[in-house]
Image 1: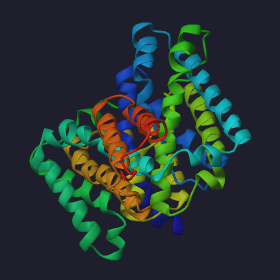
Image 2: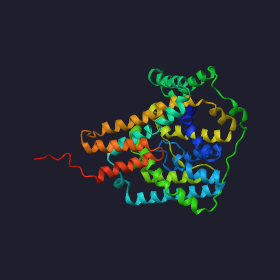
Image 3: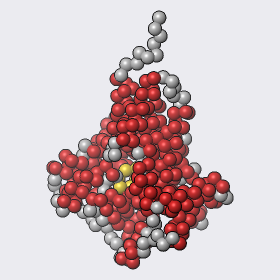
Image 4: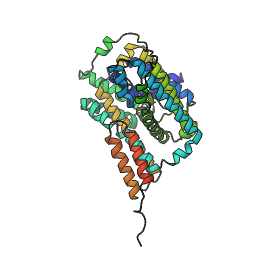
Amino acid sequence: MHRLRNLPLSVQHVFAMFGSTVLVPYLTGLDPGSALVASGAGTLLFHAITGGKVPAYLGSSFAFIAPLAYFVSKQHNPGAATTGLLAVAGVYLMIALLVRALGFARLRRVIPPVVVGPVVSIIGLSLAGTAVTQMAAVRWDVAAVSLAAAIMANLAGSPGIRVLPLLVGIVVGYLYAWLRGGIDWRPLQQAPLWAWPHVQLPHGSLAAVLMMAPIAFVTMIEDLGHMFVLNEIIARDVTRDPGFPRILLGNSIATAVASLLGGPAQTTYAENLGVLALTRRFSSHLLQGAAVIAILLGLLGKVGALIHTIPVPVMGGISILLFGMIAAMGIRHVIEERVDLTNRKNLIVVAVIFIVGVGLPNNGIAWATLAGLLVYWLVPDRSQKRVS
């Protein structure tokens, strides 16, 4: 009975991750159903490896779109793509062992709060264009109704409704779009009843390894940023318990299994962190429930297609709230850590991170983090010294 009461909370997480998780296979030529099954399986494995102490959802990574599209769509060689993704999993594993040997505390000390806060914010801000331009702007009236319903549910609803703002926003937006004739039923009519994942064995390809393995370093920095967001949301440091090496190991195993199931590389999702921040429900069981639902959606073609009928602007309105919550968490971190923004160097670090992170369309978070650290540690600061 308790698990049934949690079902709507898990469904919210499914809605949050669904669009991005199936978009990657659409863009690369992989099978969307396989990607859903892979994300669910990867998330369950991640939770098993981290002892259920990291309430995160793993979905399709956007960082690998270009090489995946090259091997799957252009070269028609999905086996090579699998080889490259297994190499990515290997890089994750090696770095996990290295971080465990050296100790994450040493790495953590070189990342000051003046870098962490802005990086957390740009995780949300870098997705703003997707939420507004590509989704909400399709039909602003539908997006506005969805957003308003979610906000009202969260702030003015009953205790039971306040933990389901996304679900309320999606249902109200969906009904409004339906009344306005904005629902496309064709995906539901055309979908098969059952859809099995396209299991894909590796096919030796040095080119795939060389193209994909280095990108793992970018996604690892992004994962670290997501863990900083999660720490702020749940007020607990998951990089200490269960530890960042186990988080990397979980990503490694999830990506390896996903590749063999015909899915893309896996990464922790900012969208689901936004759900955690909004609902204040942090149980890992909710994410595990979402993972099981994702697997079922990947197997049940009709059910997955029903979610496909949700109009893009409905999810756009919801995404404005989700991504904005993540950006706000970064600002909160700067305030709570009492970062002195009257210090000129701190201000410059924040400025560089914001513009690089928001301005670069691909992997901006990783480059912004690197740029912020370089400015903080390598550029001398004489502005605070008194001139006698």
